[in-house]
Every structure is written in structure tokens, then in C-alpha cells.
Amino acid sequence: MNFKKVSLLVLFMSVLIIAACGKAEETSSDDKSGKGEVETVTYENSYELSLGTERDSDTEAVKETVELPKNSDKVLVMDLGVASTFAALGLEDKIIGLPKGDGNSVLGEELENFKDEKFANLGGLKEPDFEQVAMLDPEVIMISGRQANSDTIDELKKAAPNAKIVYVAANPNTYFEDVKKMTTFLGEMYDKQDEAKKLVEDFDNKVEEIHSEVEASDKEMMFIQTNGGDLSLHGPQGRYDFLYSALGFKSAGEIPDEKEQKQASTSHGNQVSYEYVAKNNPGIILVMDRGAAISDGKDATKTDVIKTEVTKNVDAIKNDAIYELDSVTWYLNSGGYKTAMSQLEEIHTIVQESK
Image (cartoon, rainbow, N blue to C red; front, side, top):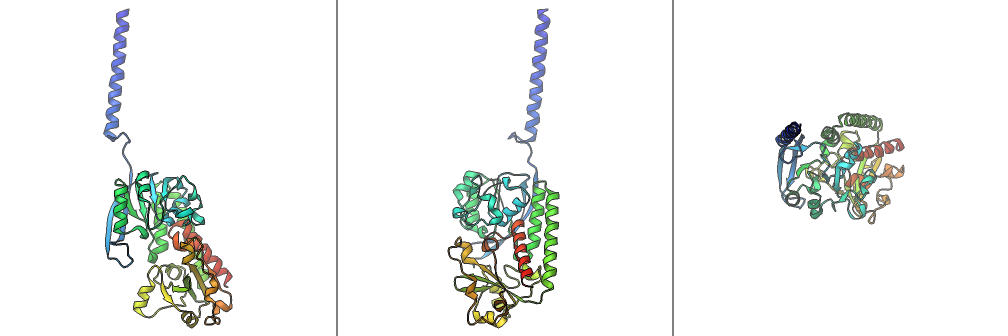
């Protein structure tokens, strides 16, 4: 009887050992690290890399296919617009860090949730905190034009050698399309395709609604960026081209000179005079205060700066049709779903009020 018990015990132990070995071999075949195979999603990484930090530095085209880990919850997002797209899809918890500036100064209303301390502050938009990046050990780093220079990219690679670095900023000439593409891509990356599709449909409907209202108006518009006493024009083909190409505004500030038109396409627009505003006589003036955006409101310029003896007979001024845009949204946070929708809502309200 004792012999039988011993035999059964030996047999039982043998079965357990064989099963355990089989299980270990199965895990090893998936991934030697024990984490299992990582599912990826393909991203076409395409942008112009500045070879210096100066605005007129030479550039080099980057065009590559990158495999990003699906459902990653270790993402650094340096493009605040795209951070708002994560938020629109309910994916805030996938972001571990983003630039917030001193005292959350660069986060607009659409990014309010990211003020929570659980999201690490990566510092300024142009000068990331590379030590913080290294501590976070991200899997993915999403950059914008403000970080798309060789110095910053090199430092990011040193700080996070295992991270995939991809450019996600919307191009001014294809702004709305890029916002929708990024929404769709994140829907694929995080298995939220249905939610992303619904967001894109809502976006298209809003654009169509505003476009119809703008077309019904005969008022020409001028977009002025203020910075202290300086005025800069953002016209067609510039940073806010979507106002003209997608929403249908007629520009009151066309610049015929080819060289000046090229300058107007830069990120800060083309400097103009009060006489220029008076001569072109806009029916609507949109004002975006750069100084307020980059100084947390400390260096804000009142829209009254446009009201002078020279401009007093301009239609927009006579009819009180000067509208101040949310500078943080337009200058620092643009390029994502929630921020673009906020821009559209602002324009919708302006069109309604200016009828």
C-alpha cells in the first residue's frame, strides 16, 4: 500500500514538472522579456527638421515609417493641440507628461485636466526638461514644430533612447484635414475607431455650418496679430490659412508683392501699418495677442491699440466689429481636436454677432 502511494506521488510530481516546463517554453516563445508580443500601429513620420534653433536655419526632410506600440500608456505629448485630441477621445491617462510652462501658463481651457500633478510638467514648449524626460522613460514622444530641430531631437534621443519620436503637428495649409487624420490615427492606436469617426463627423458638420454662414456674409476680414504696439497680418497661405481656404473668409489684406507674401506665410505674419489697415478697410477684424499668450497675460495688448485717428473710419471700427481671439488657444494650443473645435466655436460666435 505504501509502495503504491509513493508511486502515485512520484507520478503526480512528474506531471507538475512537465506542465511547468511546457508553460515556461510557451511564454519564452512569445517574448523573452516575459511581456508577450507587442502589437504595433504604423505611423508615417514626415516633417522638415531644422538643422539649428534659429528661424532661418537650413532644413532637412524627414520621411520614415515608424511602428508605434498600440495602447501605449507611456506617451509624452509636446504638441498641446494633439494633447487635446487625446482628451477628446478620453485618453488623457495615456499621457505621462507634457509641457505646461511655469504655473501651467501654456495650458488653455481645453487642456484644464492636464493641470493635475499626475501629468509631469516637461517645462517650456521650446526647451523641454530633458532630465524629466529621462526619468519618465517614455515609449512614444510626440513633437511639434517648436521641437523639430536637430539640437532638441538629439537631446530627446539621449534622454529616452528607447522611445519612438514622431512629428504630429498640423500643417497650416492642411490644418483641418490634419486634425481629422490625427483623430483617426489615435482612434486606431487605441482601438477607439468608432469614437474617432463620430468626432470627425461632428467636426465636418461644424466646418460646413460655419462655411455656409461666412459665404452668406459680404464682409471682408483682416486677421491682425498684436505684440505690444506692433501689428502683423495673417493672410491667405499663412499660419491661419484655414480661415480663408476652409471657412471661406474674404481677405481684406491681400499682399501683392511676392516677397512680402512669402514673409506673411511665416509663423508670425507680416508686419503692417495702421495706414495699411485703413487703406484695406476690413468689415471684420480678428485680433490675436501674441504678447498675452507668451506672458500669461502680463504683456497683454488691448484691442483698442487698433483704434487710432488713422483707422477711425474703418468699417470694422465704426461698427464695433473687432473681435479678440483666445490667444492661448490660437497661438500655443492649436492643432488638435478640442482646440480646433474651440477655434470654430469662436469664429461661429463672431460670424453670428457681425451679421
